[in-house]
Structures are given as structure tokens and as C-alpha cells.
Image 1 (cartoon, helix red, strand yellow):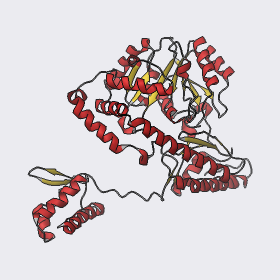
Image 2: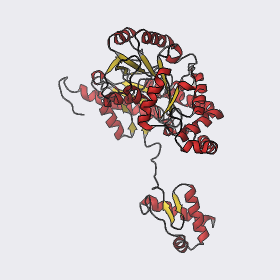
Image 3: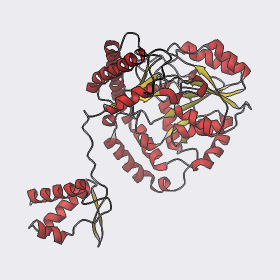
Image 4: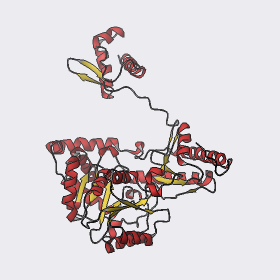
Length: 458
């Protein structure tokens, strides 16, 4: 029976792959397959039970078996070199450990997870988050923490809601995370930009903007910036907080990759903030499981009630099941071992990427040099458009990102490429950079072949 039921399983998978069976299709009856394969009904039932365990099919009592979804054949990992995806490395996600936590959460909390829960977030999770944040030098009380459905939700709410300083304009680094730009545009808020490079920002310019432009809050990514990979020094962070206090400006600190910092002495802006001037945003998407849609925001006490009112209008409460499972995961002690592993993974990948850039890119090409994190940017020659490079590499199954969407219109640069190391395989990095170097050289030589006023359509 053992070989026959495997044969039946393979035949059903073949029919799925060929399109003979599609999502929702009813499979042949047990009686039909038993006759077709000249075997017992028990053999067919065994095959169907195994397919059900693999989540390929499902059973409906008294109706038969049906297809959950078509079988998808993923391309070989060597077919695509992915410098585009910005989620965590899929091979490093703790699926099995977290499955245990979800099962335990359901068993432990039952009714609490499947009814309306505390709008601010499960108190038990907020207590664990407060404890965990101490490792990042963020010392706060659970009462100041609000659980949100991903950091993007928090940013959207902060853009829309009034602040205690009564101001209305928003300052953002240039370039920056495109999600904040989208929220600003959709809500028709007024935004100012301040240029950021791997050398940092001009603090005199920052003071001028704070003093003269009615700034509600300054949105910053202080560690492993998206897209540059830049990290501020402690002295810069302290000075920025002092300026914010002087000119009554709030800071929204997006520390989404702070856990990856190899510098144990690097502190968040929040640690330099004695007055509640810094709003600290912590996402678990990049370092853990993005599908959980759980992030937390540490707010000044006087902003909690207004924030919750705006959040209520968006989704009332964030997923209680995700919150309960995350709370158990943090409490269990599994998280530190996971963080230790991924810190090594991403630091190694970033080192390999920088070595490849040093070795293979033309000498006149500048690129950022972060110590870890996900992102590194490459500044192309002025006569080479990022979108052309992206398109040509895409044809070769090499995926990179055009960073032009990460600028306000008046700051827009069309020659910046962002590379993410989070999901690319280590053994593909050098080959990908080699192809990128050839692509840059191709467009550079092609452009230089024509006179300066020649209009080239790439």
C-alpha cells in the first residue's frame, strides 16, 4: 500500500500542476480512484489524508475532497537575484517556534483573543514590550505603549492627528521611507525636507527649519536608514533632541532596525529625551514576521487619548491573536536567540555586499557603507537614469530598486539605486553586483557616445 498511495498523491499533484485541477475543484471520489489505480479504498483515503496534511486539499463531510489551491512551482533560487525585497530573510523566520506560541496563546487566552480586546493593546503584551525595549535603552511604562497594526498605521495616524504644540507641518529626511511620503501626500499635509547623506544632516539647517517653518514633528530613521543605511552618532542625536526641545518640535523616531546594531553603545534618540519630546516607533516586521502586522509606539502621556481616538476610526483594535502569540514568544525567551542569529546573518551579507561593491563597481561610483541593516545605496553617474538600470537588470532576473520614489518632488534624484540584502542569497551577491557594474558601464558608455544635448530615450 505504501508505494501505491504515494503514486496517487503524485498523480493528483500532476493534475494540479497541469491545470486539470484548479483551486476549488472537487477531486475524484475514493471509489473512482480505487478503480482507476486498482487499489483498495483505504489506499486512496491514505493518499488524500496525506495531501490534506500538506494543505493541498481539504475534506468536506459527506461531499468529498476539494483543492485548496493550485500547486505553485517556485523558480530556482539561482534564477533570480533579489536585491529588491525588503522583508526578513524567509529562511530565518521562526515559523515552528511561533506556531507553538500561537497554539499556546489560543489555549491560554481563548475568549480574549476572539472578542474585542483592549484598544491600546493587550496589557500582557505591552508589559513584555516595555521589558524588551530596555535592551534598546528605551525605558518606559506599559501605560505609554500603544499596539498598532504595523508601523505604517502609526505613521498615518501621526500625520493626520493634531499635536500638543499646535503646529501643522512635517519635516522628513531626504530621501526617506516612501510610506511616510505617501501618507503626507494622501492627507495633503505640508512637508519640508532636509538632505541626508552618509555624513548626516546639516544641524544648522535643521535649526533654521525648526525655527521658521511651524514643524509639528520631524520623522527620522536614526539607525540603518531606509534607503541610505546611514546611522546617526550619539552626539548628533543628543543635539537634535536639544533643538527639538528648544523649538517645540516633536520627533518621530522609527527604530525599525535598531535591534541589528552591532554597536552596543549606540542609543536611540528616546534615551536623550527627558521631556516626552520623542515618539518612539518599534516595528517587528523586518526582524521577525511581517505578516503579524504588529508594531508598538511609545507616546507622551498627553497624546495617548487623541492617538487612540484616531486609531479607533481606522481599525478599533489590532489583531489580538497576533498580540497574544507575540507576548508568549517574548516571554518564552525565544526572541533573543532569534535576534542573535539574524544579526549575524545580515551583518555577514552586508559585509559581502560592500566587498563586492569595492571590488567590482567602477572607481567613480559612490555607495553607502552601513555596518549592518538591510539597505545600501549606489549613486549612479549623473547621465545614467536609475529606472533604465532597474529595467535592464530586471530583464536579466536581477531585482533592484529605484529610490526616486523616496524623495519629495523638489528633492528628487533619478540616479540612486537601493539594494536590500535581506532576501538575497549570500552566494548570489557578487554575481549580482558584477552584472550591475556591467549595466552601469553599458549606459555610461552609451550616453557618452552622444553629444551633451542629445535626447536619449532609454
